Length: 202
Image (cartoon, rainbow, N blue to C red):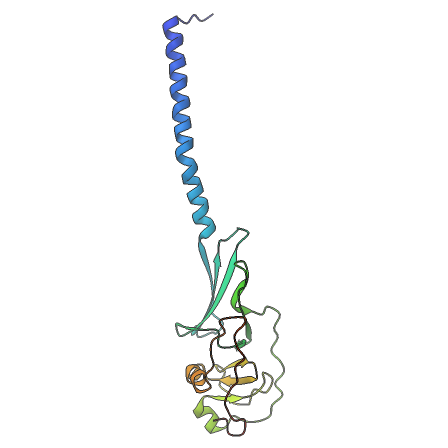
């Protein structure tokens, strides 16, 4: 049998109260820290990076925001030689990879150039040869299955409304400026008419 004196009992009770106060203080201090850590985790941006071409000149980046939350969103970007390609086109095909541009409406929507996981390149239907003037200019108008023979392997295919073309990516911004192609920024953007001649291609 253990005998505890009155003084010892009060000391024990005071020690227990002190321990409870310390525990409560730790809980009150760590709760905001836990909330902060959770908030930072939920709001963090995770980048998923791919290189669609063997040379590594193209880079495809998917930014994942608020990962793991109900508002998780994804924003995809295409870069060529480190420069981002804004949403000028509805579709871009780099090599054998197809990207379709989508516009975000809700925070959790996918926006930007979304990779088409089910895309298979169409059989080449054209027997035409790439002309010297077309190669010098850096583009020619054709549907995706009408890639001309001798077209450089690094040329990409782009589409925007009534425009379809194979383009040298090094001439891409010249092509965009030539036909005054505005980026797709709003779902309600006004219809855009391209001013070019199919006969001359100029």
